[in-house]
Length: 278
Image (tube, rainbow, N blue to C red; front, side):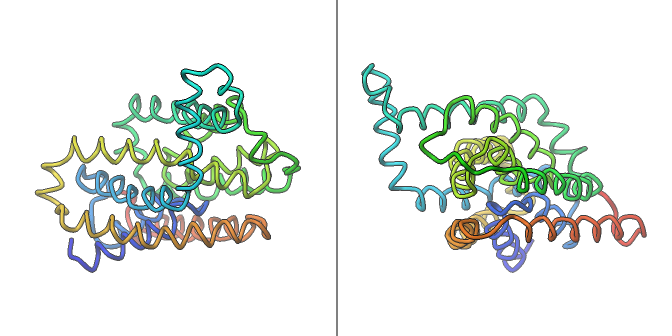
């Protein structure tokens, strides 16, 4: 991998991480087009680690909320009255909602990093989950808002988030769809998706960095990995800002259409042998 490719992959990660179009799916496709073996340990680790840049951008974007929620959560751990505060309940809800994907990711780690990296899975997931997103976008009443979030909501959304371990489904696409079906408005489900991404993606990045340190050093290289992570941080910050403004006034239709086109094009390239699945 050269610096140009690292910058390109980082930019794609930054743009797509929080859009409901699957950042892992996009990175897997691009890595294949660049000639990499997409199920090699250093490539799968690289794909996970550079997501931490996007997560850090989200942390900065949500800093005011985090500085309000985190103290309220710890205060609630030792003070019974403080547990009634909305910020304590929201913080607890985010923690509970993050647990399912951690358990499933650890249990099926090998399958996720090998079998599910097939571009056939990416294509199928892009197309099929578009139907789920379209249904959720159409059926949502959007009568509930951020102050209405409960632990039951985030736990349900957290279980659905596990579907995003299949490249092409999209972590944000899965959480947003589940949130809409819980009748939350689009801005609330988008912000909730941001919050749920922090423990899940950061934990995965740290684990991959620790377990695959030597393979990355001897493969794609840590310089390229850090460059891509830095680029994803910068690009993701602007992507997050744009997305919240966009969903406040628009449906997810444009993302659904894009997913269908990309999934169909990828299937065509695979079926004609233009590219291989692994």
